[in-house]
Length: 569
Image (cartoon, rainbow, N blue to C red; front, side, top):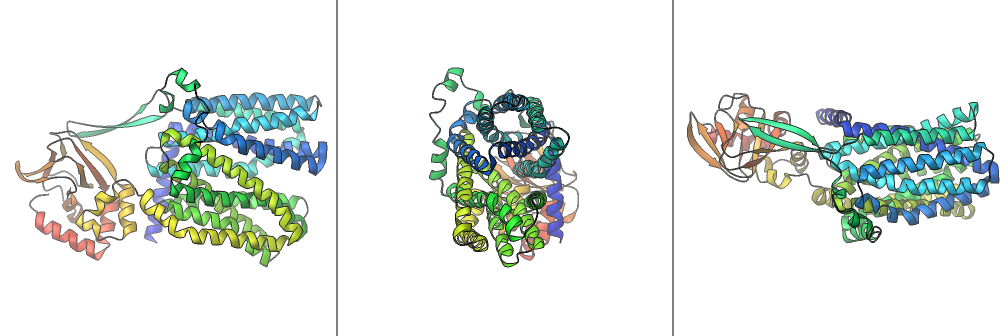
């Protein structure tokens, strides 16, 4: 229970840090309006197409939008690596606002349908530049891996909120106004998003130590690093690297595994566009509003899933949690197939919603941590292209399964196939967590005798919570008699330990100090100063003590250190 409580506390601190950061806060406020507007537009547009041409027209337009976006996603994503990402997001918002406003004017004037269909496709295409730019910008705004995960959780939660708030807003506007009013509302949300993104400024953390005082400051940077090139370089060969995102994925076996599972999940998501309606109307004999009820359950599950993903992220098993999310998209379908009832369907939709947030949060975080910044936007573009393609495949195969083997058998096939795929992928997901996503400083901490005997997940937890501290040559890390609050392991440089003004030991890379004051709860027993510029990993008292004293072998090793170096530190 203590471990879970610690995870909840750390999760709360991480999500709080997101909204304390001006840049991350503005980015999420921008998303609130934009996502709600997008879902409202989607509902109103579907109603418009259905009114004009029925289910056939709606199906044709959906396929055209999916295919167009799947083909262009990886191409337009090049812009996210060639241009200033913040400015690109603003431009995408402004252009989409203009396109949606034009759509609203045509609908209000009872104009022809073809321009409305074309404009809707263009809105989707322009939006393809926004998401890769946002996902690639986040790592430069987050100050540590935990905050990056929390930022992705915030985005996923907002998307889940928009999933049912947007349709609700559309319903209210359609009740009191018309379709054109919903389109106009969406245009305003894009303006809102552009204004919020305009105020986003990436920051750089600078640590300085002066007169024995460590100062941490955040300095606003003038622009995104990808924009620090000559305009001619930005324009020439703008789309020459469209395939670089795919190359980056195919070259990296860890990325290949993550993307393969991600595509499997999107195929199920494409199937859901068909099976949700069929489950509600045919299997459960619900009214048309039943489809909305199932969607609402999915949205509620998404909100819960955001919290679950954030809490689980503290374990350092992002890839395995991602795999669980993919399995949750499929396994609950077996519940519906076995028990064709409304409670079973609602429970299944909530579980799928939880899985959806776990997939989105962990997939984005994994990609952000594995991919170099210079191709990050293109990798997200390739991911979007693959995802949209997967949804198109799912939307196409589900009707075929219903027609040939029936809905319930089709649900079993999907549920079993994708769940087994995740089971077979578990060894690979473990490898990604242990090697590719290992936290900074992990190998350094493994070399400390009192920490080396700890279970692997405990060492990883200490590495994730550790901070890099830099001290200039000649400056003290701490003084004899100071309050002891952190344990240090030297990453580079040399430190000298002195007692009563006399040097008693010299410490180098991989050696540690500061544990006695923590273990004995006494003031610092010695002064430690940097002989050369020093870099060390610092572990806070509240993480160090439970880990070391709660494990018998580590506690024994610590006592040996204390007994050997009582006169030193």
